[in-house]
Amino acid sequence: NGTTSNAGATASKPVDLQETIDELRAEIARLRNELKLTRPMLSRTGI
Image (tube, rainbow, N blue to C red; front, top):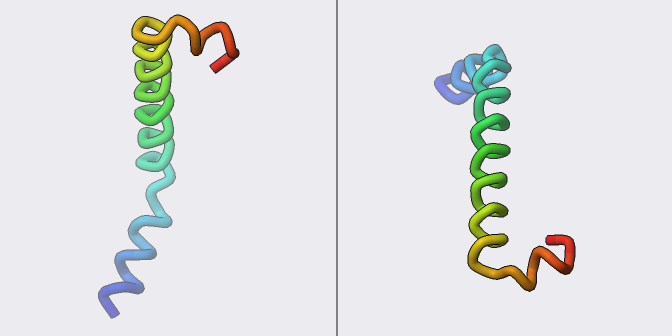
């Protein structure tokens, strides 16, 4: 049952999930900053 053991290992590491969320937030912030720089009209629409 390799699938079961893998699922258990993943579930027992909430720290990895938090790190992933932090990385995604940083990436989203970077992309939004790029959009503001390259497309000023979008920033006026609230995006």
